[in-house]
Image 1: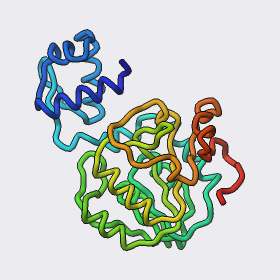
Image 2: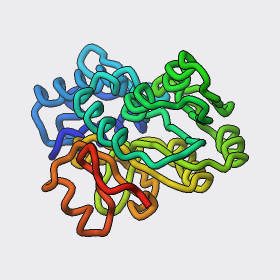
Image 3: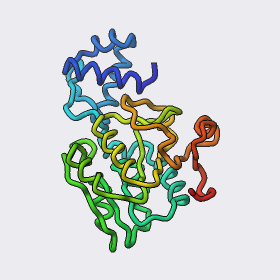
Image 4: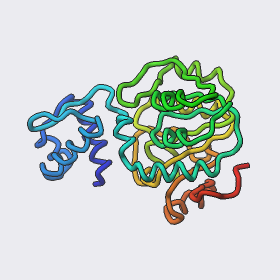
Length: 255
């Protein structure tokens, strides 16, 4: 069983039971107590659980991993994926940028002068608010502790009032069947953003190809391009499905 699969099973068990001992989880997953302790330590660092003496507790709103953890995790790969996207973006005047750490790395480096930016990410908004001549809009909604983002029905309803050129987003995981997230609220917001934008670009570092998450956002055909630092061998299965995968700084422009 892969590490992310154990994390998912542990999270689901804690969500139901609210707490569990190392011994319970060891028996549930058929792994050693030492493995469970290492998993719980990693999950605590990611804001997914609270450690206790001999076990762990479920944390409310832990469905999404803290953005501050995500900023540090695979930072080099995120920057490389952002560099690929930066070198291949189509022209636009209006853009939706999600709250992902990958798109934050991209947004910091984009020339957004005299452009309109709509984002649900507090960190993205904070960074872009320091740039001159950027028309920055953040839809109202429920602010989430872990993700530093706004989501919910109010955010989705306000997002429906926009008609935008470009969507830049990442995901928790992806495979040949589509992209995935850890929470239903996240996929609902991204599905609305997909409806309200004309060109859709997924920016995902290579590690997302080897992860899993429980909720499917959409098929890969919904995206006009996938921008990634993944090598050709990793990207090959997607290309065989007809997905436009950009993994080099300069490739033919998006039509």
